[in-house]
Image (cartoon, rainbow, N blue to C red; front, side):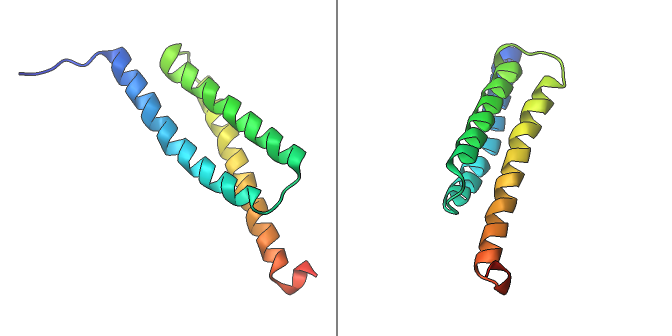
Length: 102
C-alpha cells in the first residue's frame, strides 16, 4: 500500500530537520563563546538576534511560506553570528595561550 504524503506535512518536516541541523551547532559554538567570558551586552544581543532569526526562518519556512530571500536572510544572519562567535572564541584562546596575548 502506497502512502501519499501531504505537502504541508513534508514542509513542516523539512523545516524541523533544518532547525535541528542549524540549532545544535549554534548551541555548541555559543557555549564555547560564553566560556571565553565575552562582553555580556554583546553576547546577549548576539543570542537575541540569532534566536529571532531562527524563529522567523521557521515561520517563513513552515507556517507562512513566502518567497526568497526571507529564509536566506534569516539563515545567513544566524550563520554569520556563529562565524563571529567561533572567530572570537578562537582569537581569545589563541591570544591567551601564546606570547601575543601578553
